[in-house]
Length: 351
Ligand SMILES: Nc1ncnc2c1ncn2[C@@H]1O[C@H](COP(=O)(O)OP(=O)(O)OP(=O)(O)O)[C@@H](O)[C@H]1O
Ligand SMILES: [Mg+2]
Image (cartoon, rainbow, N blue to C red):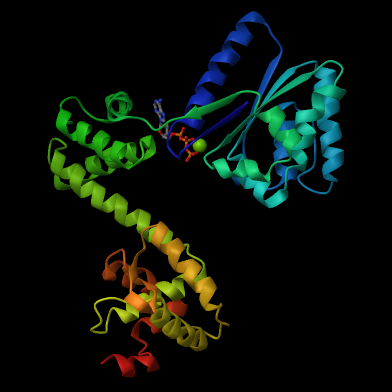
């Protein structure tokens, strides 16, 4: 089975919930079922995924040192001897496939053909639909026998989820209906992400608590939204690859000039100077143009294509986030701190 849907739509939570039910029913009936949940992003390597599977069967393998094929054989023998139905959940499966290829997945989907007594079922989970492109058609056909799409939650569903959680987390009367409704509405308007809705409610609660107020109001939620958004952007900024950071820094520096907007050519000029300053070799203008589009897509830049009449078309670009945020993140970074104060040579022409 293959489960996919956007982030925060309950794929992990629902899969675990359903398998728990299945497991207790199996226990009740005395059926030989074993379930193993592996987060592939956390596991990181095929070896570690396989050793988690072995663990679930009490098959001993060392932390490292064996060939992957050997671990796989031990797993298969264990499964056959124990005559179990083995359900493997490979969560965030795209992380494994993109880096390591689909060899392990292929072996797993074929394993039933060689087992005499045991049986396996595979549940793959991903929030990246494109990852199917990385799969061998044979793997895809066995994995896609059953596909479930988790669509985004709507505001009413998010409210249900929030209230259920709030009963555990908040004192009676500490939450206004309108605060919960707002959390749900904000998260639904984005992309129905339950994780985000829960984050908003938690942060709103923390803000009310810090203030010493007895209940959480809509205002707390609005304040929480700013915080959560700020934290999210902060994290994205920090984790950008270095050349994207340099591009962003170039746009930031250009913001100090009196120009009302910036075009790709200007950014590229400053970007090359910054590369020079940091001792990195610059990428081509074409690549940088691609980076600008990516930064536009994640909202860190705003790029608009405008026609320049007979001079063709160009992109007008500005920062998509506050300047202070860029400054905060880059001040924490040794390499970039100095660049913030750098005065590009090509500025001479702008004034
Ligand atoms: N139906 C639900 N009932 C209660 N809580 C839920 C429900 N769906 C999601 N949640 C909660 O929302 C959060 C996000 O859900 P979950 O981790 O399952 O998302 P996901 O689809 O696996 O996201 P990702 O693609 O990022 O891994 C979790 O804290 C989960 O407990
Ligand atoms: Mg998940």
